[in-house]
Length: 255
Image 1 (tube, rainbow, N blue to C red):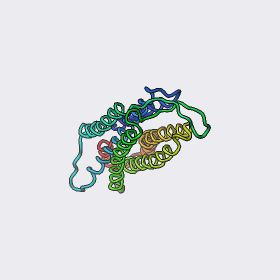
Image 2 (cartoon, rainbow, N blue to C red):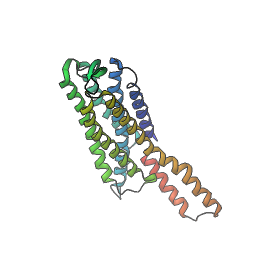
Image 3 (tube, helix red, strand yellow):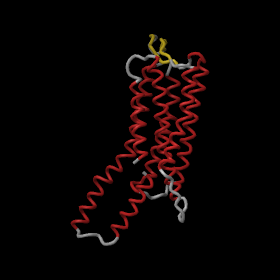
Image 4 (cartoon, rainbow, N blue to C red):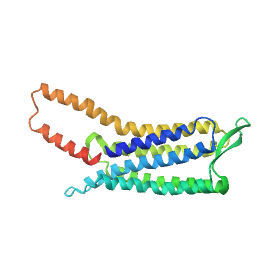
């Protein structure tokens, strides 16, 4: 469950970043938004990738299993966050997000809004923002490759398919949300706020649901029902232990 715990921590960090969207914007909250959400997103995606990568490594060769240890994959997750931290440090130093008054074209009223240009101007904002987007997109593309490569792998709780759905879900949300936000961010800040908060909340929640609910259902409901059924039927012969050993090996290897 190591990487499920990492995903939980990433989601907690992401939900913490969403709290920065509530209340009147302040320079501190504007910076919290990009720091918390950027680190949370890349951490969650990296955790999904290493789970999928482990499945791919285990099953790509029918005669040789090359299992990766948890600490090796954890190092990959940590290493994947470092470039994001470097970009965020440069963004905060050269184009510090600040809270400023802007006039929205939707109601011709001034609203306090987070501006991300600062010293470097909007060029700096676009550079750092799309640097993060491009970096995350590389991970998503690799995740799509792994999901295609492992689409036929049969594992406990249908792990490969659930990881693939999570990656597709995050990719689709990003493709839809980013253009809409850029179109509406100056004309209607309130609608932009709703879209951003909804998109991130949906992304983190859907990922957790896809990764946890099938496992909870399989362990608490399905396995208990199967155990009760086998008990009432007086045992199931030699096939029961064999199945248990396979699922146990797969669970330990994949989780």
